Amino acid sequence: MPCHFLLNNFIGAVPPHRCDISTLYGGGILGNLSLEEQLAVSIPVQEDGSLSSCQMFAAPQYHLLFNSSNITGLQTVPCQNGWVHDNSTFKSTLTSQWDLVCEQRGKNKATATIFFIGVMIGAVAYGSLSDRFGRRNMLLVSYVSGMLFAVASAFSTSYIMFMVLRFFTGITVTGIVIILAVLGLEWVDIQHRNLVGIIDSLSWTFGNVCFSGIAYFVRDWRWLTVSITLPVILAVLAWRWMPESARWLIAKGKLEQARLYLQKCAKMNQTEGKMNLFKTETLSTIIVTEKRDRAYYYVDMIRTPKMRKLALCTGVMWFCVATAFYGISFNLTGFGLNIYLTQFTYALIELPAKVSAYYLWDRIGRRRTEVGSLLMVGVCLGINIVIPKDMSVIRTVVAVIGKGFSSAAFATLGLYSNELFPTVLRQYGMGYNSFLARLGIAMAPLIFLLDEVWQELPQIVLCSVAVLGAVVARTLPETRNRCLPETIEDIEQQK
Image (spheres, rainbow, N blue to C red):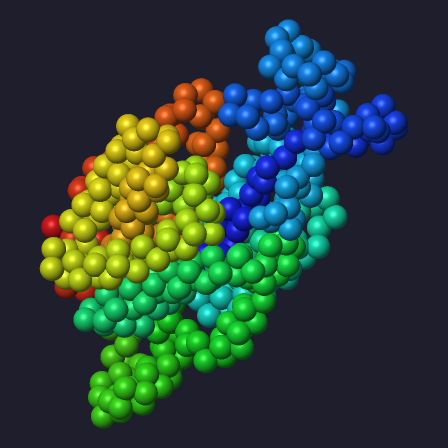
């Protein structure tokens, strides 16, 4: 999953490029000149000495062969015959495939945005469908459909075709994220929720670290997409051993099925002697405050005052954390260092950050950990605003530290928000929060287009978003060492 979420960093990378002037010397006009001379009379030079990426002279300027500094008043036009892309780093990218540069630059940024819009829609859809048809069944649907759309997108023959297939990939893979997070949490007791939460989060870190190596060796965008998708086959094979949520079965009144899964659980944990406590009559008393077989919908999250506040606050937090996290993650080339090394470092910093968060969850609580992590993200982003652009190493170090704190915030929020929502609405809550998170991620690439207004504006926006998330997190209740709420009434009765 993290490979697909960060895929655009590599398949949408913009290699060095210049106007294609092959038609000029191919027709004999510049045929007697060397390539260096052809470029000198055809393409203007920028202040840093590099060739312009988007402009060429309206006509060959032969006098520049003798006086290269005399370029005042020379007429330039946009590239007339496409671009030549440097393939020394990337064999092929979306950018070089369909010339998504210069005035087409926005289309390249839109590629990531379209994917995450699909993820947003999928979050809402799977949140509802998995609560209606079960976590386990919809997980298989997400595995298979997501793999098919992702592989199909790798063989797109046009930019539009790729965008459409990438959009549907976003919709279909979302279930993997939101269903597994909830399913894992609903199968463990209070003492092991932290452990399951950190394992789930560290699996993303593992994927990020592997992704930097896969991208380094697979530099064609089509094969990179295929390479990170095929491992889903292993997940499909492992699905047969995945149990349905006993909590969900009980909430839906399917007591006999829940008892069978609990028997398997007791056998695995070698606690079969306690199974006489879990008769269907006993299970039927777990949810007594509300009608067990009633249907729930997204609107139930705003019917009552405390549920309404919970939905608003967690939604804002997911939006803020996701925007800040991916705002940093998408800016691999913004600090002037190697893209693969930056991706690897960004991924590696997540390990100590998340392990630290794991130990803080029980010592200072989920809420304080979330607030502190988000404030430190804001501090790191603020520091990078004032550090000069030429100090690329220092800027990258600060960004890496900020990425670490944002990883801790994301890991904490995944556990924290699931503990806040009741079982009857937990999957809906995950779908709703994922929707707002993906909205934040979809906006993250577009935030960097604000540098055309003011160079530092993207960093200021991301810093402000992180601080806002910290302020909102301060208003939520602590969940440390508390039982999971089962019904809406459990939420409304909280003090």
